[in-house]
Image (cartoon, rainbow, N blue to C red):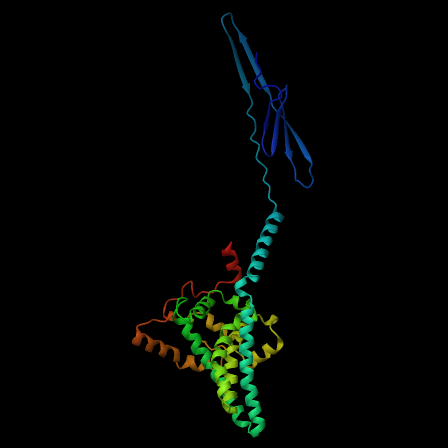
Length: 336
């Protein structure tokens, strides 16, 4: 009679080994945790009944076997590996954001910043020299204060315009429009930009606008107004960046100036990034924000533009994904 199972027949899987020996004994082996590397053996007996009957014409064999029990596959889970992989992904993603070349300053950016700062300093230095010669300081001092106040208004009007009109394809201002409109979706990127990278566009504009005035004008009062106003506008993007900064990471002097209302505060500018996204546009001191919002100044300008040119501002549209802020964590996850 032929045997039911071949001798020494072996059934193998990734987690178990079943061995049938000559007497029908099943030996089951499980691999344990890879750290301990210990094997445990369980003996599961199985009985084999053989009934044979023979006759003169034929031989019939009836075989009854017990059903082998189902051996469940052991489940393995290694949380440490998963956590390490997650941390590695997050770390590399954060590092890639911090090392984004578009946020770094180039030598061209630094050159424009040096040019813009020099232009502003020439205005202030010539104004100070005129005051020392004439001994009349009241006019230049008042003019400087007016320049500071009006720079906040100018920053609000400019910010409103590029937030609501145009696109990246617009001539001259396309890059600024694209940056400001994208800023609503990824506001945290402004805090990642290096100093010259953040300010070079305004520094270039100040150089071309203010340098001719410095060369042609000798009036200390005019130079004081131009110097302070252009300087505040040029640095408005840095004030804007500080308004998005974390309090614990900002210099103490910046926190003092924000709390005093000399620079736009974090709380005030945060309202600009909440629905309906049509207020608090000023980013120098924020002095004009309450006045402009209370008098519906920008809404009036939008109505004039609509009836005159048939152009609807972006703020009239229902807030969509282009307006809704995306956190840094969400951006990193989406990029992967």
